[in-house]
Length: 247
Ligand SMILES: [Cu+2]
Image (tube, rainbow, N blue to C red; front, side, top):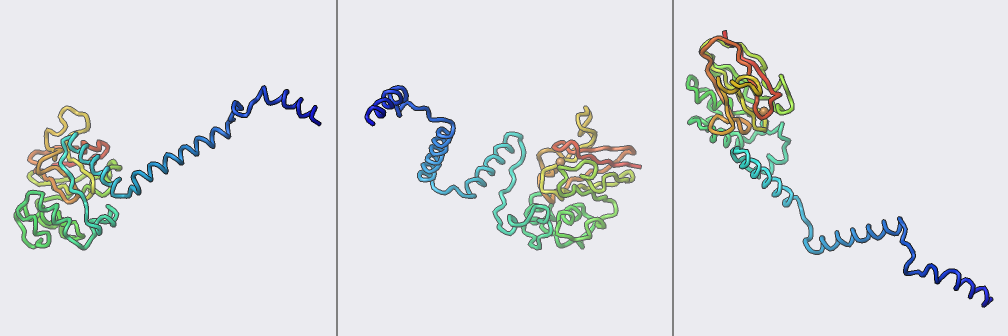
């Protein structure tokens, strides 16, 4: 018996002592997983729970940094829980007019707060006020007969020739076309075609200033004084195209 044990000790252990034995793939994986879990536990023990407020703060910071970088106006941070819990596409139908009222206020028209007083007619301020009232009122189009309304439809960023509704319109010389941003994203109404040298020469809602269609409810209008065919697009989403035919 002792002979056999001695043989095995001499044959095995000196060559492969336990300390120098290879760990193997599975062993290495287990060690890596263990270390990862330990690292996560240390993070958790140090910082605790990092909740939604942290990620939304980071998102808001990224948004404002990018907007500053591209010289875009600041977007108001939505804090109203009712608005937050409503999908963006359904927000225009919220019965609470608080949000549309506030966007009206920033659009620079003196009648901006009169989203409900659509009865006042004739003044151009009244028409922009009524189109800003995106709360489902149907009298946006019949405000003033000289104005033609074009809507930037919800989700327009992903659309092409259906981003503007109607996509192609016919007006007569002297008529004014009013574009309303019914989408939650920032868009422009820019004459010409994307990349063309004369893009924006005829009309352009722009990236800043009072006419910029930065958010839902903003309007931009242009009066067409000459006969012609006026294609236009969105500089932020060049696939978005529309057309105005002036006769
Ligand atoms: Cu756009």
